[in-house]
Amino acid sequence: MTRNDAVADRLAEMADRLDAMDVEYKPRAYRRAAENVREHPEPIERLASEGEDVVGEIDGVGDAIASKIVEYVETGSIDELEDLREELPVEIDALTSVEGVGPKTVGTLYEALEIRTLDDLEDAAEAGEIQAVKGFGAKTEQNILEGIEFARQAHERQLLGEAVPLGEAARSYLADQPSVESVEVAGSLRRWKPTIGDVDVLVGSDDGESAIEAFTDWDHAETVIEAGGTKASLRVGSVRVDLRVVAPEEFGAALQYFTGSRDHNVALRNRAIERELKMNEYGVFDVSEVDEPDAGQRVGERVAGETEESMYAALELPLVPPELREGRGEIEAAAAGELPDLLAEGDVRGDLHTHTDWSDGDNSIAEMIEAAAAFGHDYVAITDHATGPGMVGGVGVDDETLRDQIGEIRAAADDVDIEVFAGVEANVGEDGSISVADDVLAELDLVVASPHAALSGDGTDRLIAAAEHPQVDIIGHPTGRYLNRRPGLNIEYDRLAAAAAEAGTALEVNANPRRLDLGGQAVRAAVEAGATIVIDTDAHRPDSYEYIRYGVHTARRGWAEADDVLNTRDAGGIRGFLD
Ligand code: DGT
Ligand code: CA
Ligand code: CA
Ligand code: ZN
Image (tube, rainbow, N blue to C red; front, side, top):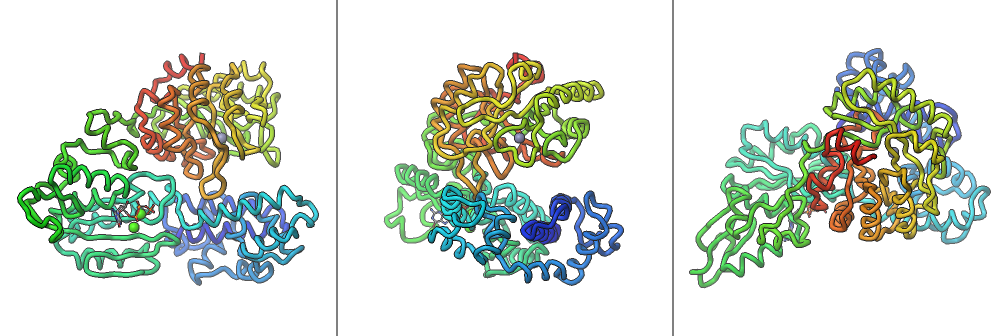
């Protein structure tokens, strides 16, 4: 974990604890400061070394918070946070990881039942004590029990969006080491799985000892878990990073092996055996003339291993893109010359789902449009939340306000070169209804309709009803899942996709790393059933336009080609789709 993340985590914890103690206003300030510190491009310790004033120049960081940041960098702790921990001795991170349990609930349950840990929470829920607390009911208690189970299962896995930057930092650090000839990130990270067990890094080097030493000296490393001659493991924050060092001529074989998945590799090895070849992490070996192919790892004549391409070529296959390597028919497709021509990051030309400070975004309409242009997009849609179920604290815009906003969006669009679509993110009710009046929808260029409440059970008919609404263009984050927190709606993708295709409605891959919704397999089912996919970031601030890559690679995991994806079209193509 970088120092900025560590500081941000402390500030966020203060926000949660203040919230749990019913303090007003301050939690919001701490939460905003936490986000901005996390996203800040410069290392926080450098700013801190220049003094509180310099730290205070970070957006949303006032004098009081700046002094706490400096205190943390200098002493490793924050007195006020320690006091808060004593006053409310609860495991706030663990408790709030349960869906539906926020800081305020934690505070209430501590007051009423002295619940401090997940175990306490589970015991109390099972004993029926929670439904007896004022403001809670049997349904809430049941939801909490289900949430605990889900949170426990998800506990150890890291979000892709957190692991990718870490993997990239490790890669570029190692690439700069003189002992390192080649370096790649492998494992589930290279396959862009939505959550990651650990980060696997592979190095090709003739000087393994120096490479390992450089790795354990990395300034991100908080703990060296183990270090040997050819492999080492570190802990960075809560993430384990595994390094393996191999000889440069075996780099391709090792990269293929350690990228996985296991199922993909098993299928490949079987194909090798059919050809009297032996395939492993050291290469591909011709064992047709060998009496005992299992006598060792490097038995027989070596026919491939320096590059990954050579490994596949030895089995008469084209290179299979890592995102497809899940053992779901990709080898058969490769053998038949029928691998998809996958969508690429550069194919995406705009973002059709973004928020501003008219709802729960951080920035003005003009700022979000400018940032989309600066990111390189040809067009952007502003789609603030409409009021309705799931919109807590009055963040959504009502129909009257939305009418005003359309004017503001059109005015802001006059000043820029990119095309701007005036839109809304309406809520899909439990019955499939849309939370904005039809005559207002008709004034908009684009309508995203998303489920935000009642996110369990089967959602197929509900979303089909929304997709068939004549004004709806996109179904946003269809399942409503939050990775590691709640699974979201069950959907029969073939039925939804067929209805959406018929109605001319696109299904979203929401690229926010907490969501990645639709996920890869859902994309594949939807594309096969003829649906058009759209990849959006749901950006609530300019930095979030960067999330688009997570959406692109998720769509690639669903075998999507550029033609399957709405926002690979130019602005004219989008207008055509919306008409
Ligand atoms: P993760 O870390 O749980 O998100 O998933 P992976 O796929 O990164 O799995 P990991 O870190 O255990 O191992 C990385 C890759 O190395 C894995 O995808 C396949 C390969 N691998 C590791 N151990 C074995 C093994 O015992 N057998 C086989 N066939 N492959 C293995
Ligand atoms: Ca891994
Ligand atoms: Ca591993
Ligand atoms: Zn949204």
